[in-house]
Length: 461
Image 1 (cartoon, one colour):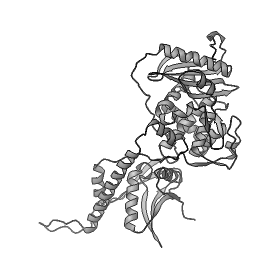
Image 2 (cartoon, rainbow, N blue to C red):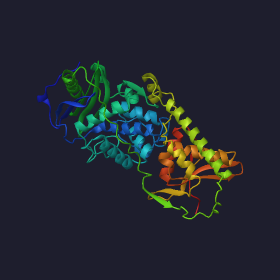
Image 3 (cartoon, rainbow, N blue to C red):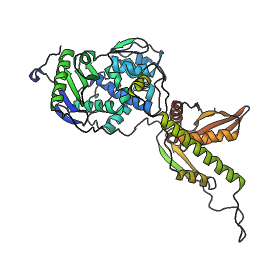
Image 4 (cartoon, one colour):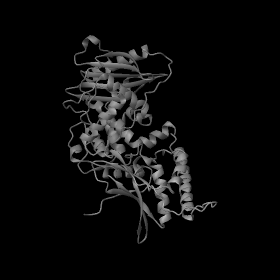
């Protein structure tokens, strides 16, 4: 039974925020912009970045993550992972969301960005993109650290984005328990979920410095309310206060209102492959071909005609594959999404390719006759890396696959050099002239599309 605690009984530091989730309208606030310790509310951002990374093909739910000593050494609450242990990302996500496991949260960050510091920087970039103006993250789990601070307003904003930006994963937060790969774990928010009608998430948090925190969401009929509390005195006190705030929200919110989902932020991603773009113009200013006699019309050279046909066919095949991929990426019903995103069934990961306009086809044909313009991405790393996407029985087949792949994965492969290397038993299809970070990202994105890929390192000096 929930006990209502009067506002006069609240001790500092305390902050609260109540919003109509459908519109973002603030229905109540108190100290909502005071920077306080968020504790494990931090894991909402860790999970948000993980959902984004899966969506963008940086990693998949079935990626097997190797647990580092750093992750294994995190204090409770934890799943109990051991250094060197291997576990799928989907189970780490479950453990972080439901159990609020610190070792799982650290492992998620390290798997996506390589280190705690790099992941914290990405968390801060994402927070800025979401409009969380008074939040600074220093780690991915929320344990007390100097400067690791947020506000009730910012965490309410984050909770609303988790709900609407990644609805296919949101059911995870309402589970009373779940299997996290190594054992069954109980939800830290199970008491409120059981006691408050319509409650379906989102995240609890506690440290000695923070007190008892909670971002909660509940839905009744057409109405949905999000309430946030920082600085609760106990679990029971916090749950009672959140229940009171949710009741207030349902009383103040209109019964019918147009849904205005928050705008999904721009993808900030990893900065490993970012850098200046340098264009080396190698165009020949003077043609060495003989001038035609007056009255003669030039016939296209057979080689040029063949190149044009190959490019046009490759473009048509790439566009046909993209249409199939778009059809496959159509969101299934909610129960199917839950099974794919968080259940035991492995998902068929796919990313909807971005197609260039039809004018690019004409440009590609023109490029077959024009001098080449070479584009390279410049970063602090050397461009001595590449990726291999298979060995094929003929040079023609390898070149065609390279062209199709370049058209479907333009974000990371634009500017790389397509090269076919003859081997004893076939022809290798390679993209070269990349930094190590960009090659790694390109491979991960292609593997998420079910394309075989491995990195090619620089030759030994």
